[in-house]
Length: 354
Image 1 (cartoon, helix red, strand yellow):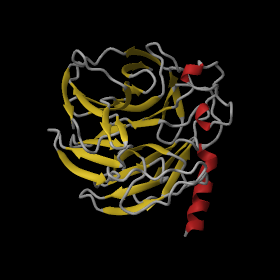
Image 2 (cartoon, one colour):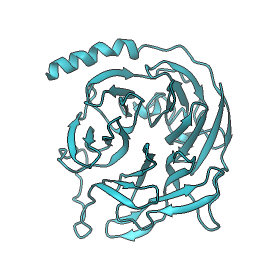
Image 3 (cartoon, rainbow, N blue to C red):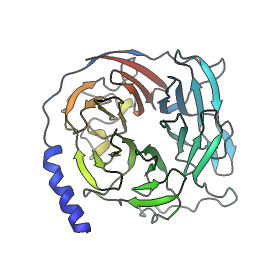
Image 4 (tube, helix red, strand yellow):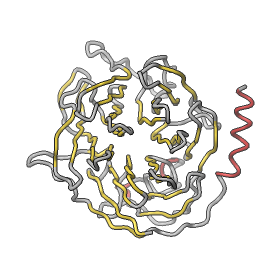
């Protein structure tokens, strides 16, 4: 069966990983001052952004440093009105918050925070109450075991995660967890929190992963996985059967400021090349589009769901309309994006003019 899956995946590559012509640059406006925190409060690294059905904006940021047995924590979750006015902090001093990674909103406006530091995914209802917890953090009285330099990551275990990165859902309400940095697999959990199945392992072959950094689903319930270090997006159905592989091969020739990362293609670092998917987002509506962000070129790409690049936006930098490590994108419509940036400690709201 594994051989059949591998053959199927290999057959998909030529149609999606072909070289691409240089697409047009999409015109857009940007607002980097939309969100207004109360006096004395600040964002740190803004790693997560999501928008619910009321157009409220949710920000997951690495700030709020507090002392713990294992060191500092850096995770706060904020909610804002559509006009950017501050509403509240959700999960203040929550046991499951330590190192923020992503925030997502499901179809019922539940809020899902994925915390890489505690190996937990926490579901809040729209009122901000915790309604489900997936995973478990290390015991505070037992310091983490030292890691031998160069040693392979520990084998994945049932029922736990190792630096999970993101979540998505299918049409039946099952949750798909990008598990993530340490385990290199997808975990499928049903709507009641029951562990159903996993697929994937660390590697470079189709069906394998090297840092599942971002995940999203389309209107058919297909699952799109940002296989970051392998510089590709792998697409599966809700049962884990492979559908296609998307590779973004748009040339990038400009020089990059060292503060935004290494020059593309240098040092053998796959993240320094264009197209390594740090963040993906799929728009709603009858015709869906895929937005993908990389790090060092600092661009956002607009694609069809079958992988055709329709256009690019921006480049790395510190100014408005430039990006510093886009970590998550919210795309409530085709021409409206909210972009969370690590290096610039902000979000930008983009209005596209294609």
